[in-house]
Image 1: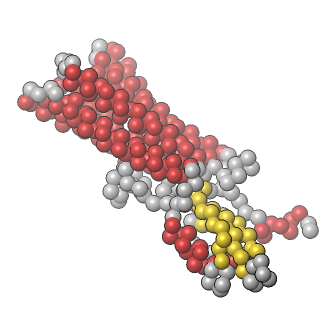
Image 2 (image 1 turned 90 degrees about the vertical axis):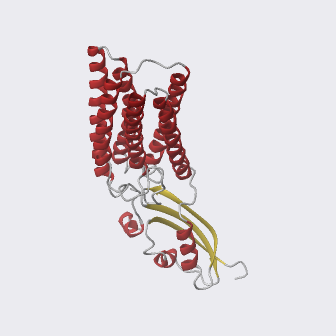
Length: 307
């Protein structure tokens, strides 16, 4: 057999999301915006002698790091999409980045909670006008960032909501980071405003604790969803059922079926079946044509033992 004659039976292993390049550009734009804001707060805080501004700047740096992880994951996955070392491509790199980012988000929330408890036990003098201005600026930057990352999030229930088997979780993690920061800033503005108006300084850390709890909940949801992908949990029982229904239509029996996600919008399947009348694997693959998101199929056909 000539080497070129196998081409009709070969296929690629690029399982990147449909909006990979677009998402990559948007994440880097948000990284740049966050870094500029971070440097502005750290430098400005030192110039004007404000520890609150400096602290908020370093807080921004943690989000910049998480967003940077997302950007690097997009870049690496794209540049190595054809690398044969990756058996099923680099599509799951975004899930690994999102898992790491979610752990960072949980750590940030726990640090905020710790600081809030410290403030409740040992209140400090709050310069309300300055603090509200910082929180307001941070909120504005995060709203712009969320708008840049918005593409398919605007019609969903919330950042902790599972968006389906085709969702780009790397983008989702970046979006959750900026929404969490925006929520923290908005809560700070409200808490500081109430504390200033009524003279209740304890309101600010209490609001911070509530915000931290919500962010931890979002982070745990991300960790669960990304961990499921990294551990090759079956992504969609409906597709699994559809595969069995289509392959067992004429008396064949599926004896082994592995279905897992290899990238945003891409699933792979390895299937073994037995039949009284074995046909070439291509016949069975044609039965699966049209199943949305099924990008890589391997089928093994065996005759029934008594035949």
